[in-house]
Amino acid sequence: MNNYKIAAIPGDGIGKEVVAAGVQVLDAVARQSGTFEADVTTFDWGSDRYKATGSFMDEGGAEMLRPFDAILFGAVGAPDVPDHVSLWGLRLAICQPLDQYANVRPTRVLPGIRSPLSNVGPDDLDWVIVRENSEGEYAGQGGRSHRGLPQEIATEVAIFTRAGVERIMRFAFALADSRPRKLLTVVTKSNAQRYGMVMWDEIAAEVAKDFPDVTWDKMLVDAMTVRMTLNPRSLDTIVASNLHADILSDLAAALSGSIGVAPTANINPEKTAPSMFEPIHGSAFDITGKGVANPVATFWTVAMMLEHLGEAAAADRLMKAVERVTAESRFHTPDLGGTARTQDVTRAVIAVLEGRN
Ligand code: NAI
Ligand code: MG
Image 1: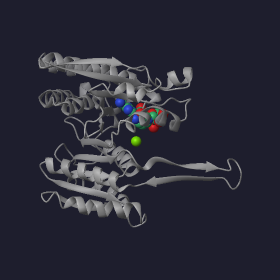
Image 2: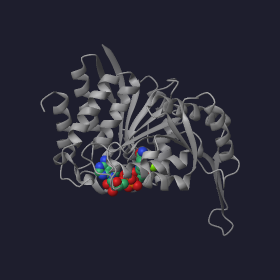
Image 3: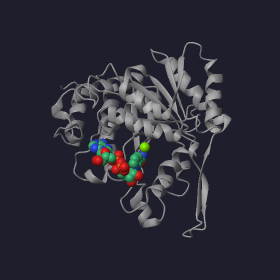
Image 4: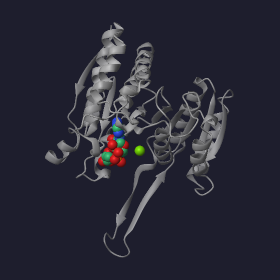
């Protein structure tokens, strides 16, 4: 029996509600599998801790996570804490030291869920967006001088390294190669950004030579929004820089029906440190505490975590259970136009897993 040590960091707002639901479902999958156990340790890191102690996590927090097999994360962000402080104080403070450089964001229209695009069903939109997760526009380089004066200056420097670009391209080409269509679109902006993005394109072409079975093309990021909206069937695997993929993946989530169903994985592909799995949505102050957060993104996130741990059969069983439940509109939460509550959806998924439905 495999015993996985999972660190759960619910964080703030609905992060707490959806991670609690995710852990219930993880326990149910583990019980059913008979092949593994999940031993969950919960960390109370987040904005409340920051407001009380001045720090989002324990000292050396990222190092405390190293012994775990995987991390399940909720969301961070509170109305009275600036977003750049919370993001850098917790989420990026984990991703960067643990070198989770590949952010993977699958998007599908799940059964029973309607895309806002007309005539787009489950077979028409099946993408995986790979986001460079360690450098680019979010490398954290820059500064501000002469604060408050008319000549105040702020720089936000995008960093593209050959090593950083090459490793994400290799990851994306290999992922495309593993999917049936073997199709990769490299998102760029090399017409306007003539250094970093031109190197990005050149390295894509170099890496492509090692993946002769993958058909790939290049797309400017602005034109990509049009293609995603008007011709979703033409896309499969997508790779983009940290900023570009951040924006495109929110669009992708919306096109799949709701941000409340979209999962993501922050992967350390070499497994030199644990990877972190989270729904892509934030702490959603507007619905916090109401018990109506859609837990589907977190369930899909748990499935990605199981897949990463090598429990492919369990991951598959969980996704099938989730799809059985999304297919029924009585289990749709308000973001999907329904009236179900977080716990209704959670109980329904567990019932399917346990063969009671
Ligand atoms: P958000 O994702 O929290 O919410 C956007 C909208 O989507 C809201 O109307 C919300 O109610 C809805 N929504 C999100 N998740 C949902 C779910 N599971 N079920 C039903 N509806 C859902 O983004 P927003 O409002 O821009 O940010 C709120 C806070 O979250 C901010 O502090 C922001 O910095 C933080 N944030 C944190 C992230 C993270 O920790 N990875 C990611 C995105 C935002
Ligand atoms: Mg985002």
